[in-house]
Length: 115
Image 1 (cartoon, rainbow, N blue to C red):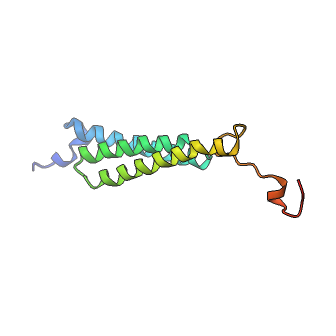
Image 2 (image 1 turned 135 degrees about the vertical axis):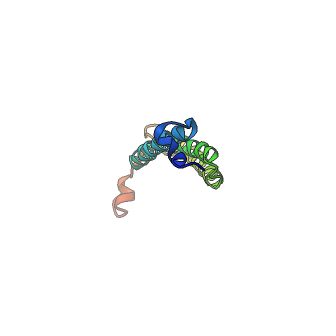
Image 3 (image 1 turned 30 degrees about the horizontal axis):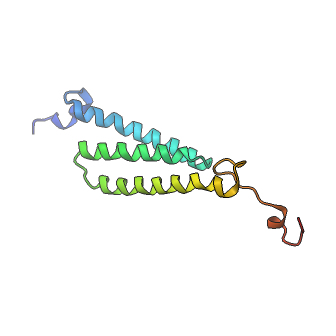
């Protein structure tokens, strides 16, 4: 290897590492966004996390870090199951509630009260 060749992405001599470097930043942004959305109990956070996992698989392929791929495929499967169950919850609770919103009756809060 020639001197300075390992840092080619800094000088944009090689396009692939430069693209992967930018995909890392995009993945970081998506991770933060999905965490905030899930923290607000929005199912769209799981969708963003799934997109991020696909992006990490692409990064793993480009950088030959193949260990990232099975872990993120597993995460995508978990997100899909979670989204499916999250979407089914409103039907169980009633159509008036939005996903992630829960309501408790007085009887559930204070069992000694009769509703």
